[in-house]
Image 1 (cartoon, rainbow, N blue to C red):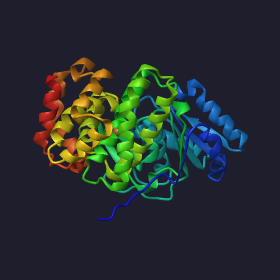
Image 2 (cartoon, helix red, strand yellow):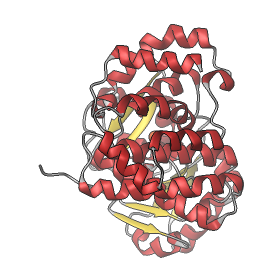
Image 3 (cartoon, protein in one colour):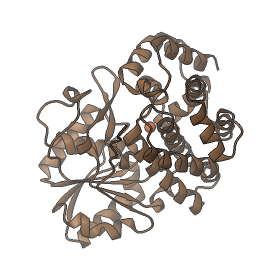
Image 4 (cartoon, protein in one colour):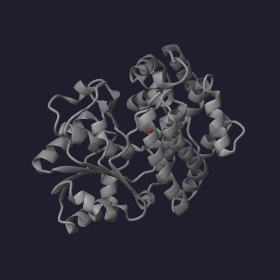
Length: 374
Ligand SMILES: [Fe+2]
C-alpha cells in the first residue's frame, strides 16, 4: 500500500524562529493580516510581531475579534478586514482558534461560495500565503490541512479540509507558549496526546506517521505533568511544542478517530474546550477501540514504559485533574436529551470510521452514557 504524506511547506522550529523566517516572510507579500486573539494582543506579542515585520519593511493589520472557537460569522468579519486593509498574506498567531481562523480566511478570501458549501469537499484554490505561529502546545493546527468551525445556523462543528490549507510556513518557538496558564497547558497537551494516540491507532496509520506519533506520546507523557506543575519549565515547554507539531503532522496524514468524532459535538453544544472534551472521552473511547488494535496499544505502552496503556492514561488524566461531565457542571439531563443528535453528528464527521473497529451509533450512545454516569 502507498501512503500520501504532506507537511507545511517549510517549518522553522526553535528559539528565535520568527527572526530566522524573515527572508521567507518577505517573499510572501507586502501587507499581512495578523489573525490572533485579544489575550495574545494583551500580552504584547502581537505588537512585537508587528514591529519585527515593520523592521523588515512589511506592513500589517490585526484582526483579534475572536471571542470563542471560530464560527462562520467571525470568519466573514475577518475576510472583510483582509479585503478592506488590502492585505496580501495572512499570519495566524495563537492557539487553535486563531490558527484555524487564519486558514479559513485564506480560503474564503478567494473562494466565491459560502463556507458551508465546502463541507465534506476538498477546499481548493490559489489561496494567499499563510504563516502559522502557535502559542499553545496542542492543536497542531500549524501542521495540518484542517480547520474546525461552528456553523451558527445548525450549531454543528464542522471539520473542513484541503491540502491548500496547509501553511506555507510554520513557526514553532516554545517561548511563545511560556505564558499559557495551567488550564490551557493541560487542555492543549491532552488534545495533542489524543491526536498522537488516535493517529497511531487509526486505520490510516503509516510507518511515516507512526514515528511522529510515538515520539509525541513519549514526550507528552513525560513532560505534560511537569509543565502543568511549573509553566516555566523550559525543557517541558520545548518538548511539548515539538510533540504538538509532531502530533499535528500525524493527524494531517493519518486522521483522528472516535475520540475527536465524539468530542466535537460536546464542544459545540456545551462549550467545553476542545482539549478537555477529548480528555473526558479518551479513556472510555480507547477501551472500546482496544479490541482489534491490541498490538498498537501494546506498542504505545512499551514506548512509555507502562504495562498497560489505558491504565497509564487513566493515571495521567487523574494526575492532571481532568473533570467529569458532572464536575464540569454540564446539565446531564440536557446531555442525555442531546445524545442522539450528538451521536449522529459524531458519525457524520467521518472521524469515527477511521477507528480500526467498526463504530455504530449505538456504540457512541453507550460511551456518552458511561460519561454521563461518571
Ligand atoms: Fe484536536
